[in-house]
Image 1 (cartoon, one colour):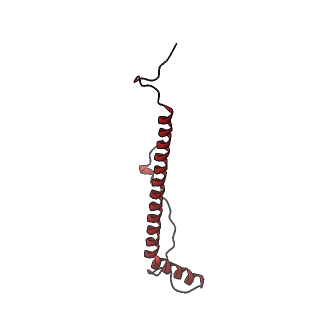
Image 2 (cartoon, one colour; image 1 turned 90 degrees about the vertical axis):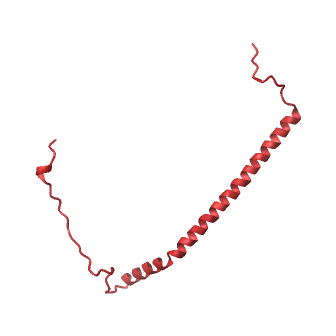
Image 3 (spheres, helix red, strand yellow; image 1 turned 45 degrees about the horizontal axis):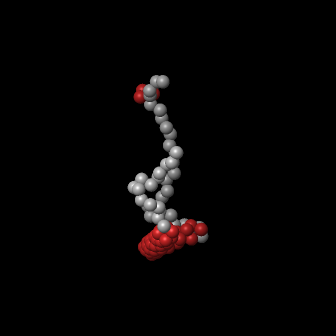
Length: 103
């Protein structure tokens, strides 16, 4: 039994055509690799620029937080919040038996 996988009836390619196909495939893979490197480099630079912008915009907030931590470590008498007092308390859960679902 003979099975013919050549569905269009073409003759197999010659050695020169096969070599050119391999070289063309290698060139396409190389070009795709180069473009992916450029894409990831641009992505990394954009991420770095965004991170630097974020750090620049939050520098005053970070400085203020650092000063508050330093003031708390020295034991200053000033309250930690602008409101003044810190209120501590307890919470008690009361179960309303009238609205309870019976199982």
